Image (cartoon, rainbow, N blue to C red):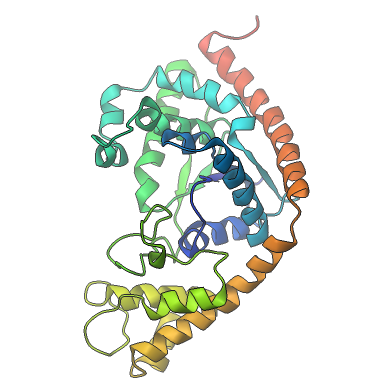
Amino acid sequence: MRQRVFSGIQPTGRLHIGNLVGALNNWVRMQEQYDTIYNVVDLHAMTVPFDPDEFKKSRLNTARLLLAVGVDPARSLLYYQSQVPHHAELTWILSTITGIGQMERMTQFKEKAGRAGQNMGLFSYPILMAADILVHRVHAVPVGDDQAQHLELTRHLAERFNSRFGEVFPVPERITPEIGARVMSLQDPTAKMSKSDHSDASRVGLLDEPDVLRKKFRSAVTDSGREVSYDWDQKPGISNLLELFSFFAGRGIDDLVDEYADAGYGAFKSAVAEAVVEGLTPIRTRYRDLDDAEVARIMEKGALEARTRAEKSMRGVREAVGLGAR
């Protein structure tokens, strides 16, 4: 039996090339090797204020984009998190074995502590993330550095549950992408590219039109000097663009440095932009060709299968903790 892998993405903001390079491209590739389960984690997205109508559209658009980039419902289980109530059920059970101190030490929560709108969902959502993974008895999870602490919490909770109630959950391992684990802002190469950044120029959306995309790369912040070289300490802006160029052109970074070392930043950024335009065109085309009704049907079918799998898993959990039918 192939190892089972889980990953999820929030339906907030517009998906950008950081999402593609750092996560979604690996989602597509992993379909060849693993039993893949992919999730639009809409419950996680409710930890910040939202408009219900816009939220509904974002869920659908996110699912549509996942299909456009190559997530194949014939090879992967794809569904909306909220349509499988077992996620929430397991979250509650896991919360009873989670220390408050553990949650207070979570880096992302500490960074957001004190902001307006803070709520219990924001505080405890790493437990929901753990439940997302464990409800399917997942063997491995692809995560970048920013989510590594959350996976460690998941591993800890799996071990604690198994120690207290018997061997129920596999302890999931980490899969780290070889390239693209960090895609930085085009306006601040020391900060990760983000859907929530106030500046639209900081990111390239997967559905950006070619002319918009070219303008964003022309205005991308670079570094002192003129030489194109790969050095994250001295040239983070150029290094970020080199990684993007390598990904979309399918060429090695050393090869690109050899070709563009003395070309100047303007010519180099134009070449990066054209590689990204070419790489994103098929995604935009597939996205526009998809019918919303068909996307909804695919997600409903995935949710039905996910509920069936999760119920089988949760029977074992309930039995282990004394909530079984007998």
